[in-house]
Length: 153
Image (cartoon, rainbow, N blue to C red; front, side, top):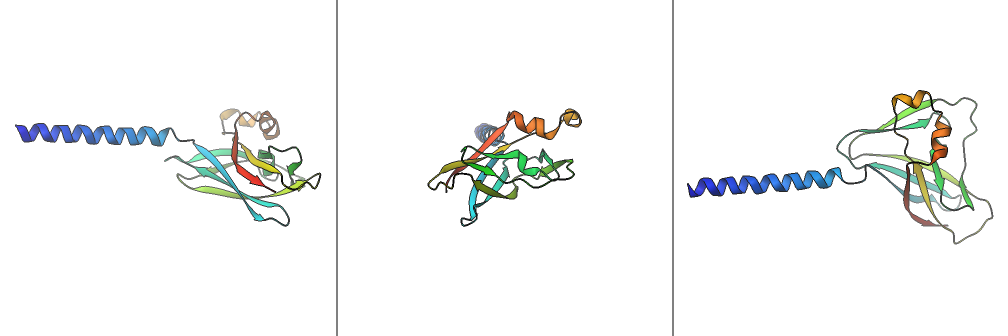
């Protein structure tokens, strides 16, 4: 009887530990962004979007103007955009615990050095309404902006 009680207690503790781990996993940020310079000379930054969940996540992007989803938090720096003659919508999927990398070209409007900045990504989740709302309108709302670590130029 004593062994059965010990076994029940051990099972209960194991159940509590696994529940706590699952709670922590589900409360991490779903999507995070990190940034690093890949070429300081021409101000190229690699932005990495990380899926921190155990499920595939998706976001809405432009087929040509994907840079619209990114911005900096410094008014002296902006992200160079593609010249687009045709732009459609696409859904990008990131598998569990994987990432997507994009290289962004920064434009330093005032040629200032010693600038501290972050890269932001506007996380637009696809919905049944995404056919109605244009990507540009959704991105301009900046409703779901996720910010990277700080960088210095």
